[in-house]
Image (cartoon, rainbow, N blue to C red; front, side, top):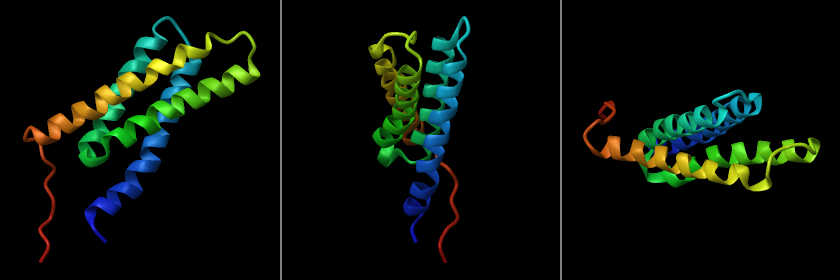
Length: 117
């Protein structure tokens, strides 16, 4: 089994967990919840983009998609929820963070891996 397949098995659930955590923080609201949500999307996207740069678009879609899905579920059960298109921009910080992680990885900050014997 290659390292890439192991990272796929690790990164996909990790991206969903990060996305659901970010959606939970967004759901709590507060004065700066949009700013904090964007920072979390950038941070978590950068982590996953750094871990596996070949699939950066996938991690951004999963993280942003989780936030958007929770927003849609909230909209279904809460009629006083905000505008339907409010959560669409959540994909932008997710992609920005994921490709920032790719840039850091390709810029020389590589993870040390064990050499195969």
